[in-house]
Amino acid sequence: MEGAISAQFPNCSIERTLKPKFFKKKYNDVIPIEPKKDPLYNIKTFKQQPDDPMNNIVDAIGKISRYDTLSIIIPIKPLGDWFNKKAQKAADRLYKNLSLRGTSNAWRTYFIMPRKLIGFLINGPSDKLLTSKKDEDNVTMVRMVKAKEDYLNAMGEESALPFFNSGILITSSSDEKENLEKNMDLIVSSLTIYGDEYGNELIEPQGKTDIF
Image (cartoon, rainbow, N blue to C red; front, side, top):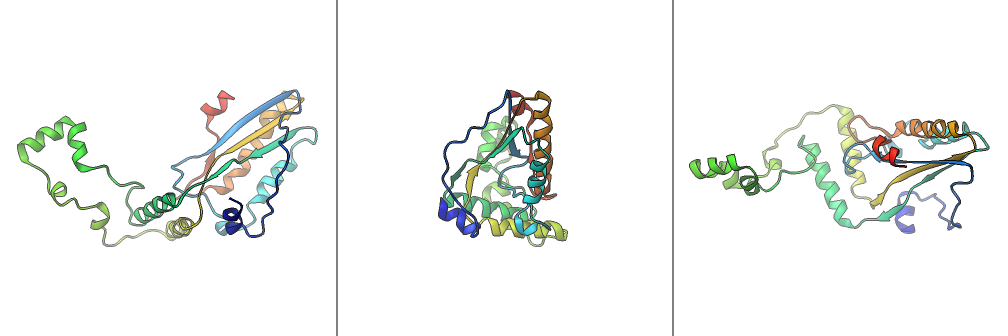
């Protein structure tokens, strides 16, 4: 895992520490952060950022009271090259202006949609079913705006790098209950810089937040 992280961030420092104590004050709160779209869509990478994207988060943390605590927890688990192949296929489909994922088996639709099954029995199989031609085979030329092309190029580059199954949890504790929501809002707002019009963005899922 250390090798995979260092491959992407050669100047990083990886250290082992003792288990931290996240909740040291009277009141505590936890919120999860998730991608808005399918995780196959990238958020903005460091290369796409005009400035250091950590600046926003550091500035937000600087506005939190010195008497409160705040932690950003990112558990990670390495994924195999199967996910790289999946990401590369997704990037290729998007570049051809197709949906993220391919259509399901054509024969399967006849069993889950009775109306199509009746049509099949009366008229026989369609040309698409007989040829088993994929959507990708029908694409000859694609036009797109420069910003979308840049995003898809970045997505293609990222698909060749090691992937991790990951998530983000933000925790805060304070002796003043009203400070918790303010602390969380500061961090969530700082994450908007990672959003991409054609890609993904990080959001706070309200339903899951209420669970905590």
